[in-house]
Image 1 (cartoon, helix red, strand yellow):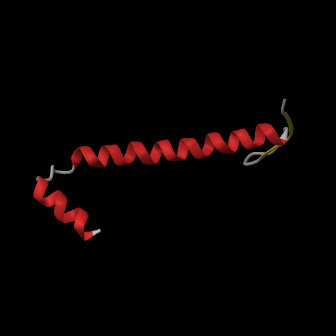
Image 2: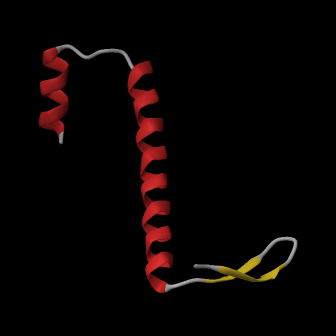
Length: 62
């Protein structure tokens, strides 16, 4: 259970259990990762396809 202790125009102070806080941090990290993946999927869709030879050349360059 959480309780709002103080509310200001740009900040809210909340009291909650450490278990719930850790879960919120995990959810925030998952959200950030999902945004990165979604952005990269859009980028992949717009890039031109590579031939097998170009792909092998890129992999060898790594």
